[in-house]
Image (cartoon, rainbow, N blue to C red; front, top):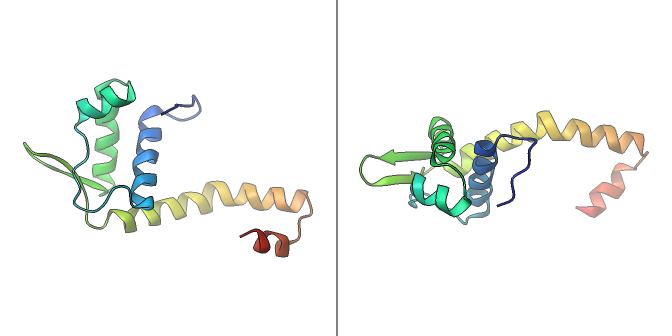
Length: 114
């Protein structure tokens, strides 16, 4: 995973989990790697991964079974969709719409591209 300097690493890792959940690569009830395993695989400090897991747990996307590990929540996909749609509508869409207006792009052209 290549990390950018524009966003904290723990949030970039969370984004990766969100994408895996939305794509179906991670399924409800599936066990995810331990904090140490994920840290070693990504080449980051386990404390960074722990922050990610704490964030995902607080968001209700994963849960911890003490002594067993972390698992994808049954309703994780719905929660991620809701959060990502909100983030898109608030952060990405306004910039996109502004750019479309500046470039005088007809909305029908965008619809055809979809």
